[in-house]
Each structure stands twice: as C-alpha cells, then as structure tokens.
Image (cartoon, rainbow, N blue to C red; front, side, top):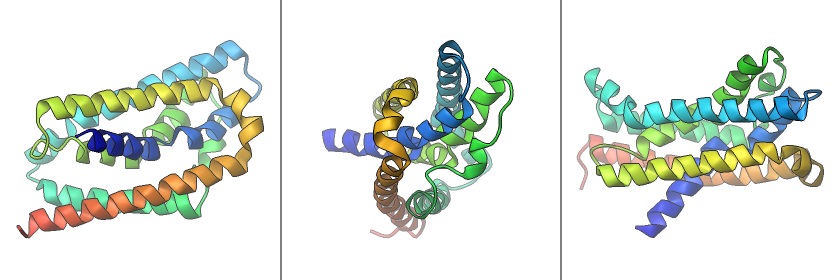
Length: 204
C-alpha cells in the first residue's frame, strides 16, 4: 500500500512538473515586484488545484454519463501521458509559447502558469486514472487527493523559491530532471495502456 502511494506521488510530481514550471514562472514574472510574484504563484497554484480536483471528483462521472468505457479512457489517457512523456524527454520541459504571453496578473496566473504549465493535459489524465471509481475505494481516492495537494503545495514553494534556485540549477539542470521524470512517466503510461487493453478485452 505504501509503495502505491510513493508511485502516485512520483507520477503526479512528473505530470505536474514543478521544476519544469519554474522557468515559465521566472520568464512570466520578470520585472515584477516580489509581492506581485507571490500573488501570481498563489493564484496559479490555486487555479491549477481547482481544475485537478474537478477531474479527480467529477470527470469519471462525466465520461460514464457519455457512456464512454473507462478502459477506453485508460488507453487514451495512457497514450496521451506517453506523448506528454516523450515531449518531456525530447523537447523543452514546457512548450516555448507558454513563455511568451504577458498580460494582467490574474490572466498571467491562469495562462500559461496554471494551465497548461501546472495543470497540464497529462496531469488531468493522470489524476483520473489514479482515482478510477472501479479500482479504488473512497478512502484511496481521498488519499490520492491528499497526495495531489501535497504535490501542489511543493509546487507553490518551488515557485516562491524559483528566483533563488534558478541560478544554481540553471536551465540545463531543470531540463535534465524533467527528462528523467519523463522517462518514469513513459513507463507508467505504457502500464496504463496495458491495463486498459486487459480490461477492455477482459483478459485474465
């Protein structure tokens, strides 16, 4: 059971990618006051958390109302996670266009920081797969929610410390860590596809 929680933490850390969000945060808040930076960090993490909580508690009911089998969603989610992992491994940790938009503080906190940098499509898919109503009971789902909130709390502090950490880590360090997490995520994505195929064809 404990091993499962560790795996969930690693998966959520990989898809949320707090370290990969740091360069985006730094580029978007360049020239702003410390107070404005803290406000953007707070709002972006809160918005991202709200979005992921919606996917945690409501997305599966929506898919079932649309009569989409969860096995199909597992396969699709696994494929999306795999593509996301490949992007982390072979491309920049965050898409370049995310670093170019400058607007009001609240809009800046929502895009590109909250979405798609923190609450990425991969994170949305992962949180649904980790809280499958047919595989996990309510207690396990609440624990997963707690793990997600822990990751988001780490993300918030990473953003606050970004200005101090960046000079030591550099873009190269962030890229290396992001690629390692991408490789781990790719293996998890393949496993999700295999689980979905097994459930869809009722194998074993």
